[in-house]
Length: 255
Image 1: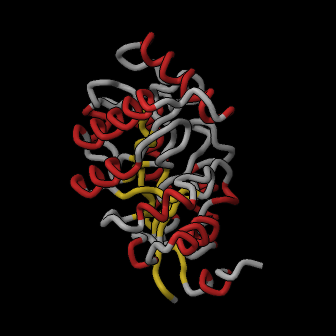
Image 2 (image 1 turned 30 degrees about the vertical axis):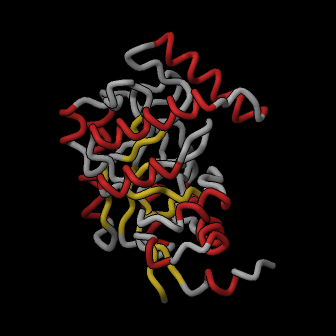
């Protein structure tokens, strides 16, 4: 039993806006996620399937209107909860652009964004090299040199300044990143840094450094199956261990 178990019971999650469905590579429908969110007492649920630029499990562009229509159908059936449509866009383009169009962004309620493997972007050869180096660094603990860390960090910072990103997802995951300048860019752009319960990112040691900044956070389930919607305790435990004040976590409230 963790010494923080009792502390986590003092808080509840208000909303969860990082959840996936069968429109990308989740295992449940939009309605499945809504039902679990209701059962867990959330006031808002957001559907944010992977951006369409991902080679294997991105949402199909033609499905965005179908997702919006499904939410329009469901909202009157579940008036106790607000249902939003977002996307977890992908960061890889050197220009800072995400893998969604301006029209698609305008039709969404919010945009999450993070770095993932499997995106070719505007410079496919460079992207493949970046993915390979980051994959080796993440899986085997080698290959993530200072040059690659700088490239990764600059990619994130550029994207933060070029887009209206509500949440930077699982920062520090899938490669070497310098999270302190990324946190500074999040402060400047009003972007929340995610404390993920699906990926262990940021790790506790990095969260300790981030606790000394002014950046604000959000805890996300990153649910790929409906039963994980509303999961927040593992992220809150990491935050408490790192000395992050729960008041800085946007989607928690004390009970």
